[in-house]
Image 1 (cartoon, rainbow, N blue to C red):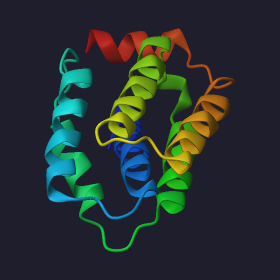
Image 2: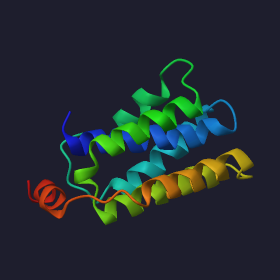
Image 3: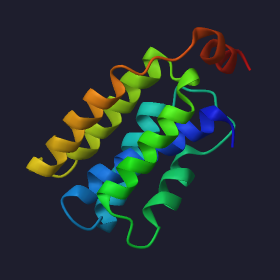
Image 4: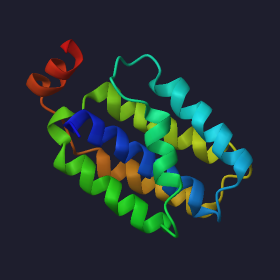
Length: 136
C-alpha cells in the first residue's frame, strides 16, 4: 500500500476503535459507519475504495478498541509525511461522527477522541509529500 492508503487504513482503524469502544459493532452501526466515512472522504480522488478498507478492518476477529487505536497511530506516525492539515481535520471529523452515530456518546468514546486529538496534534506532514500525493 502507498503511504496515503496506509493513512486511510489508519482512519478505518480509528473509526473502528471508536465504534468498538462501547461494545460490539452492530449491523446498523456498520451501515451508518460506511456512510460517514464515504461522506467525509468522498471528495478525495483516490484509486482505492475507503469503504472496502474499513469493512476489512471491522471484519477482523476480536480486535479490541485499544489494539485498533494503537495500530492506527503506528500507521499515522509511520506515514506522517503525507498527513496534510486537511486530512487531519477529516480524520477528526470521521471519528467524532462515528461516535455520535449511536447515542449516547460514551465516556470511553469521548476518551478515545480526546486521546486522538492530543496524539495527532503534534504530527505534521511535509507539504512536499502530501501535495505530491494530491497531484497524482
